[in-house]
Length: 256
Image 1: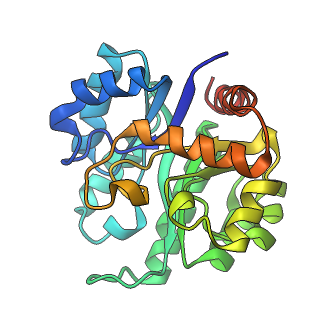
Image 2: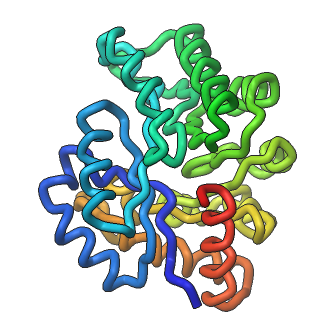
Image 3: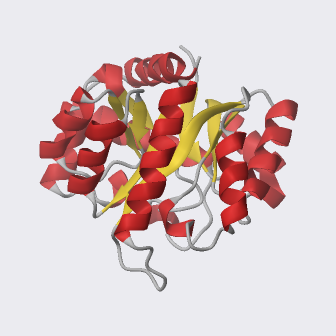
């Protein structure tokens, strides 16, 4: 059996990067074979490319995160867009739409503009996207349908069962994060995990964000994907080896 895959972790953010060696060791001990480092600015991306050169378990994705659009100087937008052309960058992301309430709210029209531009860039260079979606299912679905021509990942999927089939039809993979464990008592969340096809399922830690209940208040790392795998296996009533192999195959289909 191949090892587990963490399809989404912020290893090069301020919380985890100082301890990346320990994080790598813990991940390997937990049975994780590969980790996609998702970067939200140029500093994180430069760190990630350096780590990937040292440690073969790391892959790199980079993109303009919707909640950060107003924080990033405009001149850095161009650098970010150019960076994803680098062959060492496997995916464009995380990109997307977020209508949750924050202290600084990015206008929806600006989120759409940046999201569409990055999807069109992904189409041009033929790389998958990693999509962030929070409280914006209808618009996200509409913009993907209208603009995206490459496959991608619905990261930490929260769009519900009814929308899942549309995202699958558009070539998207459904990724489950530790938030699944936090929300596992909801019938809709459980139904998504039950019904997602094996050839479209991925798992992620989203570390250090959205820790499982057992780790609330602590900084968690990629090792928490093991709990996500266990949850999905219980819901689907399948052997761990079967799910881990399916996730491994799906990840390689997308990025290799």
